Length: 339
Image (cartoon, rainbow, N blue to C red; front, top):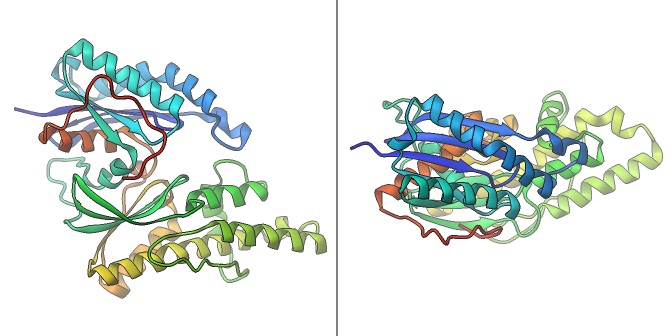
């Protein structure tokens, strides 16, 4: 008998719904929110209001594109956290209402685990690109920078994480002070492709183990701008591409140094990347370079699966359904947690 999972993702500012049947994605619908661009970051109250407007049409469209009837659903998988509480409440409440009306179980999903398991989404029954266990996954986004040892679908161990800012946060904040708008990461990436990565030197942290820190890099970047602007008021405009290239190269170098150390120490050469920053072309190139230099078997997600999406929620729900790992109706969302 087929297992058909409806996934719901509402942890930040994207409302998404997806249908996965027996591990194969039938649909994945995402409604993004442009309202936050004017504020230079996500405004939680505006995000939750937009989710309320989007969730019914998005879920309806996901079911329609999948070519199924809602009566065929086996369970509802929803992002319980971490994320913005108001946004999570919209998705959680909707999942509870739909699961109750259909008399099917609910499956709570950890947003971070879902990013890792995005590598297991099949677009056709013959897809066989998934990593083999155990593998290392570098999870990098606006809110998280972690190295995770993945032993199984339901067994993940965070062996390193940022002690302050995340990599994506560093990109966004540095972009903001340069006046590049929000979200800044994609703009930095685009300009970096035209700049010189060796033009400027920024400080790199010396943190023990596999943990990360990006606050020092951010401060170093700000001080560079402050000092150079005193000499030349047009410094940012005249050096924008080189600044972005140097910033991006430094972030990637910090990320890959720790990941390389973990892979060597743990004797694991199966390595994946996940999260919003995994869309960065420089980081993708670094993974391909390490595959050649160190014999890694690398797994880089499709661009559609790098940002928040419900397909990663649904595939995680699929594996939890096979384990009959359901959650009670009283389950409440949470804003912060580790894997």
